[in-house]
Every structure is written in structure tokens, then in C-alpha cells.
Image (cartoon, rainbow over all chains, first blue to last red; front, side, top):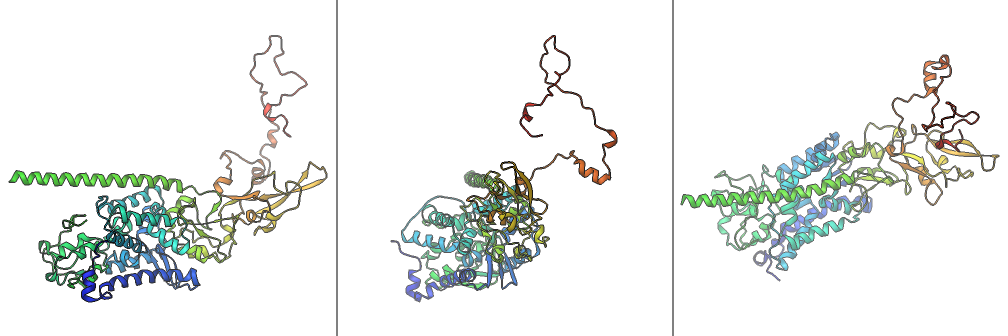
Length: 299
Length: 278
């Protein structure tokens, strides 16, 4: 068994403080799922539908803009309600950073987090090398495919919507797809699905370029190089510019692929990180670190 | 020194290009597989029926975002979302008439619930829905064809005497009874599936099929004499009298002493028509 990141933080600040954001995220993920499940399970219809489109209290439409974009690529013009819902969701994620969807909403995140935890726990190292840019290629591919086939082809295999829809409408064989993602992340590559392949995350990542809500390495001078944040972060390449002031970068993590999960805040025994508003002083614009490159000795 | 950094840049460029090519190839392969699968998934199995207002399958699969609101708002819980292992595009709504048929709600809540218009909002009268078309496929097992008065498909049809009528026919087996043949009229049938669901056989003799599978199509040049007559108000050929058609004979070498026209007494009947009641 390997030493788990966050051990020092738990010793320094107590277990609860060292898991604050993790717990908050689980409450958010499970809470949203519960809202969806209250209808089919106990007949309390607060939210109808699933993450692709939901209707809250027969009033608030929320549409996954990515699935709607595929529909547009398939040359279908959606009706007003779906477009309104997509507008609301787009506005929200432009504000809080797109990949908040990944770490605070997506149900598959709990599966991949579990795989990452177990991977660290069992000390599994190495595995397949795929560029973190692969997800953008896959994103483009799904849009091209929608255009070519005239259908929302990615939804045939999308593990994210398959899991969420499965939990609400009946799982069927979707569990096998979810298991495949778990095993991929556990044995084949670290953060394989969410960090390298998932086009849903890639799409939401594109919405993260302007949002003011960011994690910032405000106390970066306190950093003792324990590497726990790199170890626990699902997108470790986003940390280095802010933490190590690469090219005079501001302490704010500006990379759009930061999921605002707050695990780095949790696991740091020196309380280097904190959530903040604003995008920091424009010293030199922080160059995005080439995908996959993390400090030596870490994978 | 300059040369060294140039080499380094060269190596970096090379690596970048190779990495990009590798990723592109991998993703292209994935896309090819998914594309072929998507083509397969466009074929809806005949037993699966889309909700009212769904239109052509290809259009539907481009517009439906798999949210399941139609399923939720169906008061009779008839619709379901396809699971990955089912032969219907994952996450799309359908029903199987033999299990549960559409109740044809007057307010069509499933269509109203659809946020994208994949179910056409212009459908406001459920009688105009064309979810499929019922076909009495099996004449050998249909009880009415066997001479019984089963009539179940006719009785359960929400458009009784319009979408399904009973057409009397002589029962030639007994010579003195009448067969009441359930007959579907495609201009009225909504494809709700009540007839298929109600058929008392082990396997239904009447089934709902996708319209394009169930319907034939006349050549465009065909004219129905009786329709044309009605339109014109008179027969179009009466004044022409009966047209004399040339006699056509099989082209076989004739024996030298044979008469040049057909043998008298026995009119020629093409083989394909022999035994048919004409």
C-alpha cells in the first residue's frame, strides 16, 4: 500500500478539514443525482429527465449544450425550450468554469475518482501514454460524425449519459461500459477517461477560459514540494505554472482544464491553495504546459 | 551551439508531429468504428415503434437528445428508453406494441414534453399520428380467415370501422358461410399497435410495421380507371370502344405445315396464370 496524498494535511488540520471540498463535491454529485431519482423512486417530481435535458418544477429547462451542438451538427434545429436550456447552462458554466460540470455534477466522476484512489492505494504506476489533447480530437470527431451520419452518434456509446440515464431509467448493460471506464483508469492509464479521452469534459473545458472562479496558489511561497497536490490532481499539468510562477505567472490557476474540484486545497498541509474570484494580475500570460508533462518522477 | 538547439527543436517538432499523427489515427479509427455502428443503429427493428410525431428514423436520431421526458410524461408508462444492449439506438424512446400499445391520448403529452421538436409539435390531433402501419401479415393463422368471428383487432382499434374494417368474403371451404376479413386502411391507421397487442394468437397475425416497410407504391404512370372516371365525370375510354390488341404468341419455330395463326379451339393462357381464377 502506498502513502496517500493528504496524509500530512489530515495530520496538520484534521481529517474533516483535509476532505472538506471532497465531501462538498460528493454532496453536490449525490444531491443532484438524488433530485433526479426522487421522481422515479418516490414519485416526487422536482426534476424530470436526465443530464442531457432536464425540466425542473415544470419551469426551468436545462440542456447539455454539447449534445445540442451535436444535434445542430446533424442539421437539426432544436425547439426553443432546448435552446433556452442550453443558454442557461452555458451562462452558468462560463461563470463558474466549465469543468465544474466534471467534478461537481458528472456521476461518472465518482467512478473515475474511485479508480484513481484505488490506483494510488495499490501503487499502480505507468500504463498507456495518450496525449491529453486526444479528447479534443475525439470532441471534433463526434461533431464530424454527427454531421456525416445525421445522427447524434456519440450518444450511442457516451459512458457519461449512459450511466446517468441508466441510474434513472434502468441500467441494462450500461454497467459494463462504466466498469470498462473504471478498469481503464485503474490499470491502463491514470485519469485515462476524464483527463485524456472524454469529449464531454473537453467541451466543458472550452468553457473554462473566461470564468472568474478559480483555484489560486495564494500562499505559494509556503509550498514545501511534498507533491501531494500533483499526486491528487486529475489534471496535474494545470498546477505548475501557478504554483511555481513559471514565466512570472500569477498564482491563479488559469488553465481551462482545472476542474475546480478543490482537492489540491484539501491535501495541502501548508494551505497554499484557496478558491478565489478574479483571474489574477496579468504578469506574463501563463503559457499552458504541454499536455502530459508533469514534474519528473510523477506520472 | 546554434546547431545543437536546432537539432533539439527538430526533435521536438518531430515528436510533436508523431504524437499528433498517432492521436489523429487512433481517434480516426475510433470514429470509423463509431460511424459504422451509428449506421447500423439507424435501422430500427420492426418491432420497436417510435412515439407519435417522430418522423423518419434518421431525422429522429439527429434531433432526439435522449432526455426521456416523453417517457416521463406518458401517463400509461408505455414508452421506454433503449438500453445499450437493445437493438434500438441507446437512450431513445420506443415501445413494443405486443407488450403495450399506445393509448392515443387526445392531448398527446409525450409530444408536448419533447424539448427539441424531435417529436413534431405540429402534431396536435393524435388521429394524424403515423407511428407505423398495421398489417394483417398472416392469413393462415388469423382466426377470421379461418372462418371464426374473432374480430379482436377490429374491436380494439381506436378508429374502428375507419382504420380497420371487416370485409365480407365468401367462405369457399364451407360454401355457405362468410369470412369477415379485417382490413387495414393506411389513410387512417395511426400505428398505435392496439390490434397487435390484442390479437389472441400466440404470435400476433396482425403486426404494426414501419410505414415504409408496410406500404407498397404504385408506379407514377399508373392511373386507376374508376378514379379517372369519377374525376372526368365519364369514362375516358368508352367512345374508343374495346381496343383490339395484337395477338402475342411464344416465339417457337413453327412446323412448316402449320397454319400461320394460333390453333383454333384452345385459347392461349400464359403458364403463370394457369390455375388462377381470372
